[in-house]
Length: 347
Image 1 (spheres, rainbow, N blue to C red):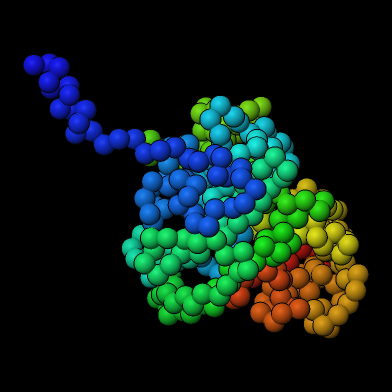
Image 2: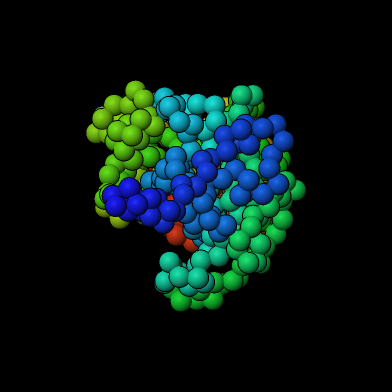
C-alpha cells in the first residue's frame, strides 16, 4: 500500500523544469529567441529558472521611466569576486538579465505590465556579449533584435497624467558605446556599492551583498557595513550631494570616467572621482559646441541655470542631450535633484 501511495504521488508531481542552457549562453551564435536559453520557466519570462537571483540597484540608470526587472545567473559552483570599485568580477557563463517594462498605470505598478525588451549581458570566454530580445504583442515570445527598433508606449504616470514615449531598443553598436570600459564591453550596474542595500526576497528582506555571500554567489566581500555604499538617488533622508553623485555615477559615469568613451572630455562623473574640477565644478568644456548652450562651465557653483551639465540633461535634442543614448524624454525628478545639488555648492 505504501509503495502504491508513493507511486501515485510521484505520478502527480510536476517534473522539474530543465535547467538553464549554459551551452546556449556560451555559444558563438546567439539564440534567435530568449526562451532558447531556458532562463525562465514560462513563455512570458515571469518565472525565473533555478539559478537566477533577482537583484536591484541603489541608484539605477534612468530609461524613460521604464520599470526594470533584473536577475543574475552564475553557472553552478561558481561565484563572483568582490571588487571595492567597478563591477564585480564575474565568472565565465555569468548572464545578467534585465527586462524593461511599463505598467499601464504607474499608480498600480503590478497590473497590466507590458514587457518591451529583455537584455542579456553574457560573460563568454572571449569577453562580454550584449543581446536585446524584443517582446511580441502577445507577450509570449521575445526575439533577438540586433539592429534595434522603436516601440510606441503609452501609460499613465505616477501623477495620473497620460504619457506617450517613442521607446528606443538599442542596436549592437549602441550597447557597446555605453558598456565600453578601456575599449572592452563590461557591466555597468552590479557594483558592490550599488548592490549594498536590502532586497525583498521571498524569505524576507536581506542585504544583497550578505545574501550573495551567504548563497555562494560572491566571494571575498567584507561585511556590508565595511563596504562602500552608493546612496539611493530618491532617498530624501540621504544628503543631496550623496544622492546627486550617485545619480551622476549611474547615468553619466559609465562614459564619463578615465577609461570610458568620454574620457577625452576630462569630465569624470563616476564616484571614484574626487577632484572638483574633474567633476565639472568650474570646468570649461574641452570643445565648446552647440551642446554648451552658450554657457561657460559644466557646473557653475550655486547657479544651475548657467551650468552646461544641467542644460544638457534638460534637452532632448540630438547632439545636445546627455546622456545621448538610453532616453528620449527628460527625467524631471533627476533634473530637479541635480539642480538642488548645484545650488548647494558654494560659488
